[in-house]
Image 1 (spheres, rainbow, N blue to C red):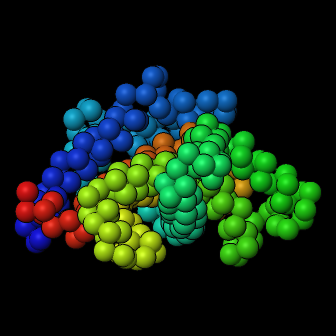
Image 2 (cartoon, one colour):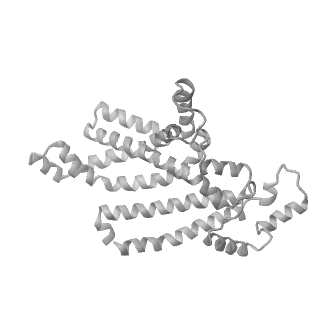
Length: 307
């Protein structure tokens, strides 16, 4: 198991450096002069523009910019925000817990709803329950997140008055954005759970367990669900990384003060160092989540770590 973990960590290093390179190229290969884009529409002297170019290191050759950027990142320095004049690391650390909280709450919703819908659809295949669960799944896959979020605000905040439109950081204000992200994500989980459960329920050991007189609840919990977990763990892990990045739109819709909202603001204000830092943190989080998924997969199925 330890060798498997070390091998996965070693494989993760070049992936992370590839991400680091792509994030650097966001600024280096942007059409036009990044500094002039930052100051577009603002009154600024040539001296101010040149000083900002020097501050960002854009007056150096591209290869030197790259090695300077990599060296700074390895030391935990993501630069300084142009708009707030604060270190980018501090800006992200202030907002990341809120995004992580939203992603975990959304993941909980997606797993619970997706498991229940998928298991019921598999147990009652071709019934009204199956049709309803799959219709819910298709609706979730085809519904834009921002539109669904606006509907949630309209019905539960404006019409019913159950939740405040302006979040106050409490758990109550977390409900609507978590439900919006979680219900959409649960549609994928439900379809995968249904498919995995139908495959497992058709196996010989399930028929053998039934012939021995085991009750259906015991067969479901002791055999079917356990053996259907492997593909579900993979998609849930990937969804968690997707929820971290997908929170950008939802945070903007619900004014949730996470790094998604911060990223939208940074992009609108042309704050390149802050935008780069946010993209790098989100991408790195995705890589770490994949590592955790690999470890969980190996724990559930030892054949993976031995292969």
